[in-house]
Image: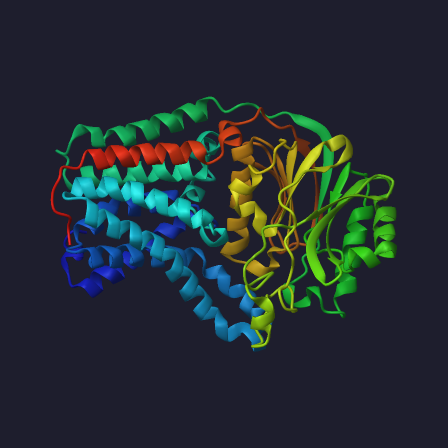
Amino acid sequence: MNRLLAGPLWSRLALTALLGAIAAFGLAPFGAWWATLAVLILVPSVLASADSRPQAFGLGWALGLGYFAHALVWIVEPFFVDPERHAWMAPFALIFLSGGLALFWGAAFWFAQWFGRTLGARTWVLICALSLAEFARAYVFTGFPWAALAQVWVDTDVALLLAWIGPHGLAMITVMAALTAGLLLINPGRALWNVAPVVFFAAAIFAVGRTAPDVAGTGQTVRLIQPNAPQHQKWDPAYMPTFYERQIEYTAALPRPDLIVWPETAVPVWLETGGPALDRIAAAADGAALALGIRRSEGSRIFNSMVYVDVQGQVAGVYDKHHLVPFGEYVPFGDLMARFGIYGFAANNGQGFSAGSGPELVSMGPLGHALPLICYEAVFPQDINGVSTRPEFLLQVTNDAWFGARSGPYQHLAQARMRAIEQGVPLMRAANTGVSAMIDPLGRVTASLALGQAGYVDAELPAPLPPTLYARTGDLLAFVALILLSFAVAASQRPGTRRK
């Protein structure tokens, strides 16, 4: 590897981008966590090949570009729902999104090169800077933490650490263990304290795997409905009745569950004019409660919503999506952009959808209080921690038809599983085209419907676990730990001239 990284800059950039693409194999649907770990172990060697701050920035940016381009290749899928209007934008979306997110990693490498005077020092600075960059990526400009490094662990016992330190804490100790292992790979005679993160990481994995609690059932049954409506047909008048009748049929099937969940925007009418449709759905449910994805309006404002229909067939709760998808559900300066023919994919009028008031619980009778998450909202752990009262379960309704049939839906499911572990509560998930699933508080899928399959699945609702440390502290604990580590690394640096 050192020989390959000794070539001209263009070859080093290309090799580093390739390494980034390999690292993304750790994400769903591949789940090759070892590939991500192997690439991270090689990062100190990449950093050692930089002769200046611009080179370090370029190598970090190339690593991020390869990683995010592979991880987010599904982002082109929405542009082919209406290809005549949008297909030309697909490659630009992937390039600009991947390249923009890679700037965070490039900045981390630049700072490491500037602040550290030895490879060991630069590596420890990079551990802090890269962890901070991932924090920033989750919060800046409404945040986009998709493909977070912690996601690679979702199919392993390592993911149970999410209940203690959250996704950013898990990402930080992953980076710390891998990069210090990379230092030892370059020079096994380095300071022994570089071994400490590897030992600590291994011990933490062993501990959480041995102490995982048992999960009980509630005895309550939930039906998750998956109509499998392709996005290009979902709102086509020739196909809409087929998908609607399909969901009515699944709703009426015996035996009756305690709750029936339809996916995001599954009801093909507006809430304020949809009385007859809601009455028919309630009649099909025949005494079972319902959670339905539906659109609603208030004057000129429109909302992506979920309603709870109680056992009497009455609308007893309404939740409006508050964390909207930029350029999907709304366009910044939308009325101005509309003059140039630029609209959000999901709403072809001016500003698009309006945001709800924020995360809030909806009482669902005997099942307890749910925290609704509409599609993209399951990506943001900080939003779930934004409610003052802990829910008994999380309820995600989503339309993953936008994400295609390759990596996007599986990555979205992985993030939903992470939210369940972080909070220690079950998560039920109804997805238009899949994957619909019941997820227990340890992130395990207890029942599911495959991607691209029409049908329904009845599953017992697991009981919640006691509140996790992450549920009580959110990202604060990991952030404080990162700041303290950064101060320790800064204090260890001897005075001297910064690197160019």
